[in-house]
Image 1: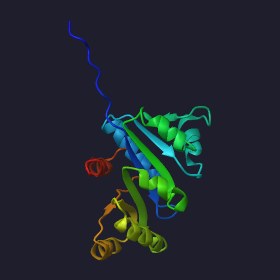
Image 2 (image 1 turned 90 degrees about the vertical axis):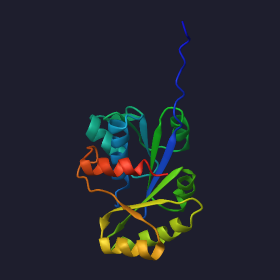
Image 3 (image 1 turned 60 degrees about the horizontal axis):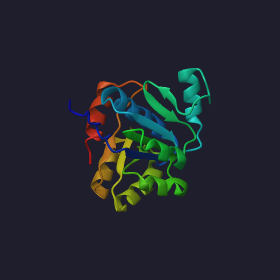
Image 4 (image 1 turned 90 degrees about the horizontal axis):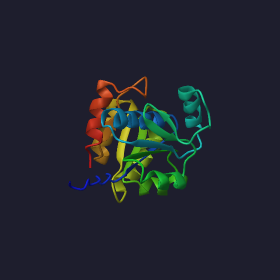
Length: 198
């Protein structure tokens, strides 16, 4: 009888996500991306809360009925790590195919860690009251050593076209999804394209 050979696990891909300002949908995006990777692509996925928002503690309570009992907690097959940092990331790298990091709002405190990620997603808004902060980070992203993926769910299509024209920088349009945990036809199409990007 031949010996059974073990399949080499696929290399872990780390995706950092940060917002140009508060309330642009960074956590929502991470949950949607994780749902796609787990439910559709069948990949072992973790999401790390690398910010002080406390959103994951509230998510754990609402989704599991418990709070602070387990680390990670699981929702629909995805593992979520609240109040995570470098230690959790190191432990996750040999356990998961994808690790998404929710950095919250971009700033000097997270920029270095964000830049270490293989794939970096900057999320902003083209709404008038959030546009200025997004523009500043878009200009930095354009000149970054390795490109950032820029995306937005809210705001003016006209402003999006202006960015493309002036900065020569595409900004992905994140599909609106009322429930971050559900995979809709719009999110399915978006993430199939997103995860094929190199």
